[in-house]
Image (cartoon, rainbow, N blue to C red):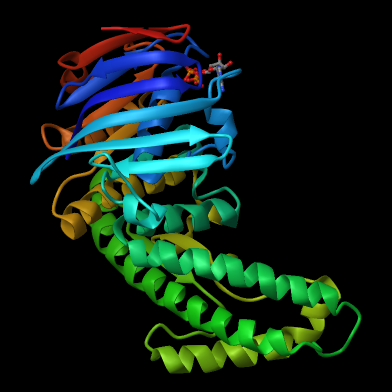
Length: 370
Ligand SMILES: Nc1ncnc2c1ncn2[C@@H]1O[C@H](COP(=O)(O)OP(=O)(O)OP(=O)(O)O)[C@@H](O)[C@H]1O
C-alpha cells in the first residue's frame, strides 16, 4: 500500500498543506522544530486515529484553530481509498471513502504504518509501558477485534479499580457488581493474553532471522511474552480464566490496600534475549539498537503476511542514529518494496543510493517545498 497525497488543515504548525508523494522514498529535510515530525505524526494519525507521541488530541490542532484535518489518498491493491480524520474540541471523526465510521476500531487498519522513531530505540531499555504500547499498537492495526477487546478491558479495569478504592480498608470486597465486573474482566483479559501470545510467536518467527542477518550471524534473538506469572500459553481459555480468577482472589487483600488491580494484561511484560541473555540488563547499546531495528523490520514482514500488502514505513530522525551497516541493512530491506518517509536534518550522514534517488522536500517554519 502507499500514500499518494497528504492534505493538512490546521494540523500542528501547518495551516494548510497539500503534498504529492513518490511511491518509493520521500525525504523531509529541515532544521530542528520546523515541522518534519509533525508530517510523520499526521501520517501516523491517518493510520491509527491517534498520535504516537501524545494522547491529547487537542495538541494536534493548530493553536487558535477550532479544528484540524488530515486527508490522505491511500492506494491499496484493490483501489484508491480516501481517508480522513477531523479533530475538534468535541472529539474526532474518521472517514473511509467519505463515509463516517461509527467506531474507530472499524477505521484503524485501512492504512498500515510502521513507525521507527528515536523513542523506539528505548523499546528494549525503557519502561514496560513502552513495550505494552508497542504490542497493543501493532496488534491493533492488524486486528480490529483485539482493539475492541482492549477497549472493553480498559473500561472494566477502571470499574474494577473504582470498586476496590470504594472498599478500601476492608478484607473482602462488599459489592455485588464486583463479581460481575470481575468475571467480564477475566474474560477480556484471557482474549488479550491469547492474542498477544499468538502475535509474539509470529513476531519472533520474523525477527529471529532478521536479527541474525544484522548481527552477521553472531546473535540469536528470542522474544518472550510474560503475562501473569505461571500462566501457560498452551492452556485452553477456560483454564487460563480459572488461573487468573485464583490469582486475583489471592491478591484481593493487597488490591484493597492499594486500590488497584494487581494482575492482568495491563501489567504484562516483554523480554528480549540475545544468545540467551536479557538484552535489557546485559545488552550493549548496539545490541539494543539491533533488537529494536529487527523488531521494526519484522513488523513489516508480519504485516505483509497478515494483510497481504506491505505497510508504509515512517523513519523519523532515526537513520542518522544507526551506523552505516545497520542503515544499509534497513535500506536494502525496504528498497523498491515499501513506501518510505524519512525525516532528517541533513542527508550527509546517510550513505545509501536509495536515499539519493528519493523525492526531497524542504521543511521550514510550517511550509514544505519540493
Ligand atoms: N498545535 C500546534 N500548533 C502550532 N504549532 C505547533 C503545534 N504543536 C507543535 N507546534 C510547533 O511545531 C514545531 C515542531 O515541529 P516538529 O516536532 O515537527 O519538529 P521537527 O522539524 O521534527 O524538529 P526536530 O528535528 O527537532 O525533531 C515547533 O515549532 C512547535 O512550536
